[in-house]
Image (cartoon, rainbow, N blue to C red; front, side):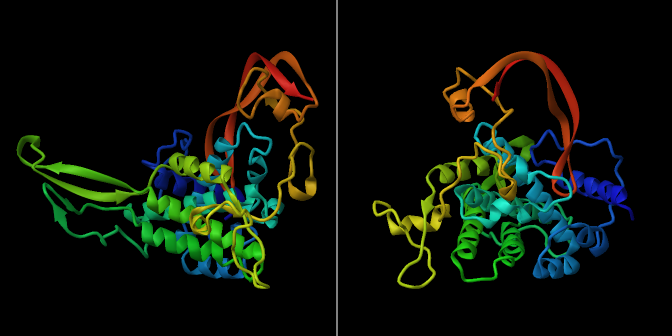
Length: 349
């Protein structure tokens, strides 16, 4: 199978799994057919997998394909959350590249913390949904909840969040080999992403009874929308906590005295001050802010003075090219049409 054929297979697979996910961009004109998901179509065409990830992919190619789909959802959400910031997550969306191999993730920045958390949450969500939809051989609906209350009972086909968490943990944490601070930071932030998703799981119910009386409701758990998880993690990003060495051993601890030690478990953590992201740095995959569109009157982070790093900006009336009618492709980027419109824009110098 050539690369183009492989892309088609994965797009079909993603289309199947995206039903009910809540993203309008996940539309494709490719006709439905049974996708071929095996170790050849998934593992050999996924770059930069670690040895452990490759073993897992060969053993469970359908599960890993679903996890990788979740990674693409997560990157799209990262782009949305950071669209008005100096670093806008765009370096993670590159053709034929594994975002986990992005050079920015080799550093201890606050942005690194967010990326690990959102990727972990995205993978967990995608696998949990795929289980409940019957798309994966190794898992099915969550049947762990039992019991009933007044007028309701647990039942239905809940998203298998536990299996999603297990898969995400095995896939992501297996890359962290050392007991160094960076590995511990990554594993902690991976866990925060999964925990944030689990803690925000939703309860959905269906009524039963004569003539729609809803005398009894059957309820089950579902994963939250990725936008809600992105919002929660963005709050944690804005209040992230620094970590460091302690007592000659590598362990997570607070370096801000005013913060409580008990808050570390739920916080995103980092150990290295971020660059200002104003200037291009190819070694770190930082594009800089020259050429970015800004808003002179905005009170948000896309204000021209802030986004342009006080270099100034120019205002022009021109034809703006935007991406539109996008759908996910392999791996890990979007295939989009190009839409053009004439407008007055401010562009960072």
